Length: 241
Image (cartoon, rainbow, N blue to C red; front, side, top):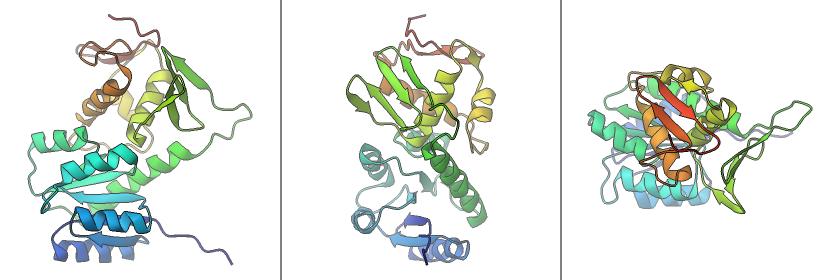
């Protein structure tokens, strides 16, 4: 008989009581949960088996959550939920800038964390499932880039451009709706599994991260333009406004 491997969540937090609480709650909801108290233990758990998502505390002894998130993003697109006892907007922006997919301020409800994890996992799975239509999913070309929907990859010539799941989904929305102004609400509506919360400015952060990877000059974007007061417009020709 074949067995299905449970979805693994790695909880990285130096508070053993919180780790224990989250482990019990998430395990009761069908997840395989492993713990780490710092960056060294996090790497050891990942080496044993790559997690499907990571809950990462911002304030850790030694290496903090921001530096660990940067490290993870250099090699992986694993969904990351950042936790912090500080709820200021600047912390949220920085956390998302370095690669976190979501942010939750302490204290929080375990049920809210569960809902956010499920939404992130749905998005990650949807991004890797190949389309079942008769024709293969299109290869979207713009400028020197090619976005392969089925292969979940962006290339520039022969080189692959690393994208997180959130960045890939956002870029796919743009290339499938070229030369159209898309508001933040439009983007949120078209992003599969996106959970709206009080911090909807996270769309702007994702656009900024994406621009850094595809624009020659992110300060003067040619592909993803800002339309003041309206939203964003994707120009596949990469012509400066």
